Length: 256
Image (cartoon, rainbow, N blue to C red; front, side):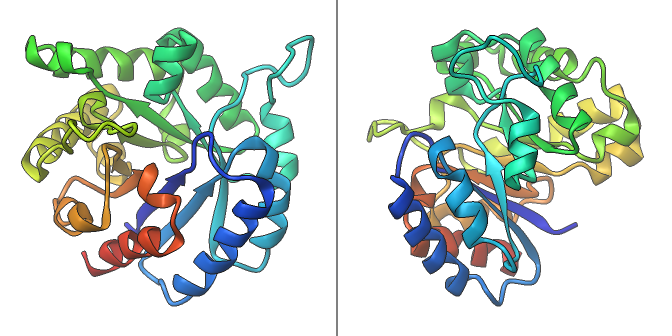
């Protein structure tokens, strides 16, 4: 399967900056053939970026959504709105949404179902924090998250979903003291996740599911991470804000 390299710009970039970045990115990745590329700008830039990406192989994604189609939900964005604007992907269950907005697995599960209803491809995030890892709870946490977030999903729907493993302890968020997981750390959890998908569904579904790594991926570590057999792409945060840096990660995926 082709690897998926997705850019999560988080709360960064004005509309003009977003358009400028994707203009540059399109030129840098125009020859990419063996990797699928997605960009997830802030909501304010989605429409402008959508227009810029037309007739391009770079896909558009959103960073979040509500599970309702419409209603009295001030400040929220619906899956129907994302589909209307040209989104193909949507990030759900990101660790920052879980930590700072109090989203739990049941709430995220509703979002996954709603995304699929509107033919959006969820990038479902799971992962443990430092305390959970130090306590030997990492696999239990990930298993619990996956089982609850996928408990209403069938095998055919799973074909639309990518899983992103983001070890919260490895995400820098501007903190220079954190470290990315080693390729062995990442591969071990990715292999575990693939086994969980086989347990929840079957081995065929497990083999065909893309599992992305999402913990401080950079050009410097992308090649070795993406060389691991169970890592099928990357969800890239800070390094995706610069078109050249992100393009280097795409190239690393093309090589592996």
